[in-house]
Length: 355
Image 1 (cartoon, rainbow, N blue to C red):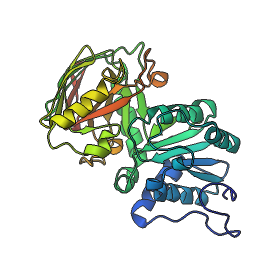
Image 2: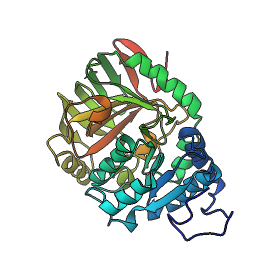
Image 3: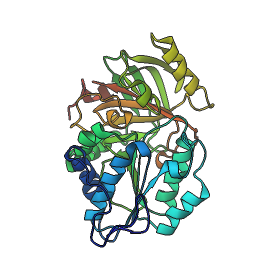
């Protein structure tokens, strides 16, 4: 059952499908997102915020919600703001969502430069104030719907919880990788929490990225070199898989220098990391756990879930991790085929878990 007077498109005749069924290539991913990851049912009310470039994915999600008999609204960002949206969402968007009283929300849209101040308060409100279960699909595209969203999330969840159990009390993690990564992270498990992201978002007031499969914390300190193969935020769509690793020299959790042969690209990233006093600070330290993913796609949303390491500079997700600082930016850096030691014991060798 759908909310017949709301969302994209006009009212349809009684009993007619309101939303466009997806092509088979992405329908499995949409079905997984709705029926497995969010477990949408007839008692739910669903809001999907998409954009014009990803409207077909929003339609696919909405069609699966229709099959689950959940009232659904599909909204497009461009109907409310001009992109890139660099400020908080307008009141009329917030009011429309609030009045609908969603129990499930999706953000399934392209990623554009500087939009964290738009996305973050919006999704925090949905999750922590409205109590919705939220699937965050920022930067989603057809390839991710076919690959990462087709994962067996029961298996992803089991492995993620195993890894989280191993790292949650750790104080020292060492990482090396062929990309040039050679670093040590010091952790503070009494103060800074690990957050397992299993892909199963079944409890009210919880959220995760989709595709999923990682566990993350905010590190107390990071020192060494991080070799990035894929970058986050808008750099993912702009540059994809880098032709060679971008090397970040890190001291006391701050970027000290960036090395990359293309000077224009290097300066683009360096400028981003200098936009705020904490934009160059290591805010997230994470281990990917989706073993169904074996190759880089160039899309951060999926690539950070490949077994290996990613570190994000900027926003440390303070509400989730317990970090006592914040930043208006968040840029992940992915390093695959990693060898990881947790308090001196191998967790991963060359990108393969060994426990």
